[in-house]
Image (tube, rainbow, N blue to C red; front, side, top):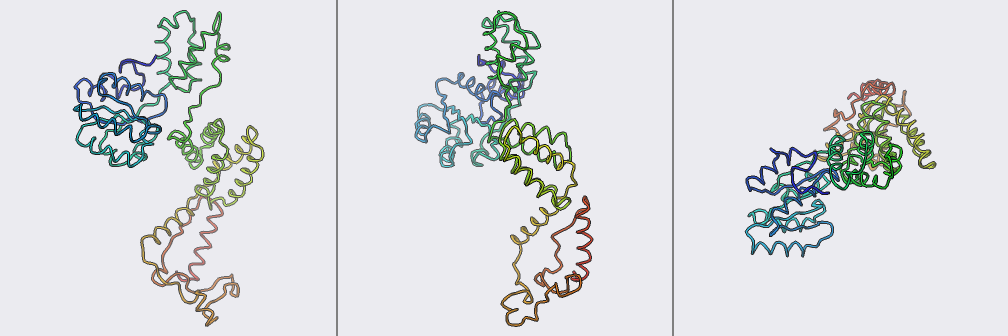
Length: 400
């Protein structure tokens, strides 16, 4: 049931519609090298196979995760007999750098036209030298309406003409498939097992678990984690719980815990310093319980974090200090806090606990940068407002 023509591919009109860039390439016989990237099931392989069928005599496939460099050499040798070879590279993001480099001269002089396929962002995963010689096209995510349109087309085929399926059942398939084409077609085919009237309840039972479309270790997975963190950072408790629920359904408790602990110190920080220990405790309970019970302490702490005051001043401060260290001259530590100098003259160092308020004037930073400021407090939480006030008093004593 894979489409045989570009016009039959759903959801990708910007590429294969009447005025799509790939359609125009084919019409004008000016096929250029390009990469298609997007989620699984969006039609990358289908587009490549349709184009290959148009160049059957000199079109070849290479899988970067399983085929050897020798296979690539054998394909490239064919350029001695063909003026141009079409090479489809599946999982191009997995191609080793030396293999990518080997392709460069063939790509440069036009002997090989490449169609690369990947679920990973090629701006990150593909060698810049290769990437700069290819156009990059992002596949649209398949929508529920796209799936419904496909299912209605399928019902017109002989294979399904005897199925009496309601719109309600088709809608169920579209949702449960996670908008993944192959899954939707598999679910539709499974309905042929039902005798008699196909009710929603029977269809739900026969089609099994809903697809969640998380694509573990790929861009979509990290987009989900990022959306989770951004929602907590933005104090949207409902969005935070929504993305937490999606992560819970994925079932990777460790990655949820790592991300929550990061958020506690990156986005809440000194605005609510008590959140760190609370997060640690909730995460330990979640680990002890495991799923499904772990959802309860996770929900508790995520609600707390989303509604907590926020501050990233600690992260900004250390990054500012690290940038300074990496880009500026390193100055000598003042002699009054240098151990080897203090050993020779203990009076150089003033012990703060011997002074009122446990603070006294003395040099800590090198003289050349004694006025530098790395930490700038925010006032989103009571605790950090108190830190700011205390810091202002301390600066007067230290004469900064």
